Image 1 (spheres, one colour):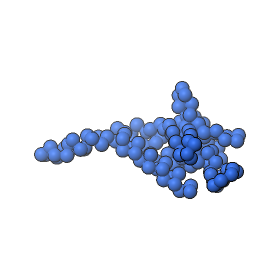
Image 2: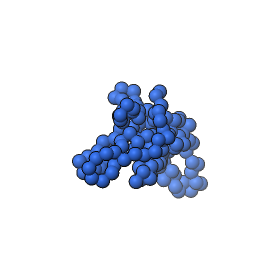
Image 3: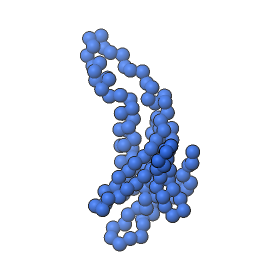
Image 4: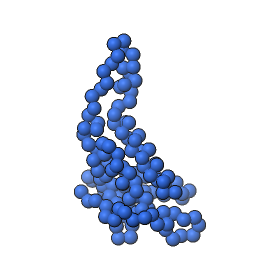
Length: 129
């Protein structure tokens, strides 16, 4: 597995007319770092067959793809490998009356982990400005 190289660079704005925008490679590095910091995420991966990465001048960030729409909207795709122990948690014991049993099954651990990943990435992007 490849690791991204220079992770500790400060974000730099790209040169373009109009409002300053962070380079995609900087944004991708921050997103990859945020995803790896989540308990249960073993690594960020480019994938097995259709490799995903963000490319910049002389470097790439495997496992993170950024796409910008004409309206400036940012679409983020992140491929992660999960630690099996993070998704193999035992189901909570039902109450004696059976109340709450359906609620416990309605929120599987994998969906909670996916939501945590999404929120962490959103927060990392917002922290960039």
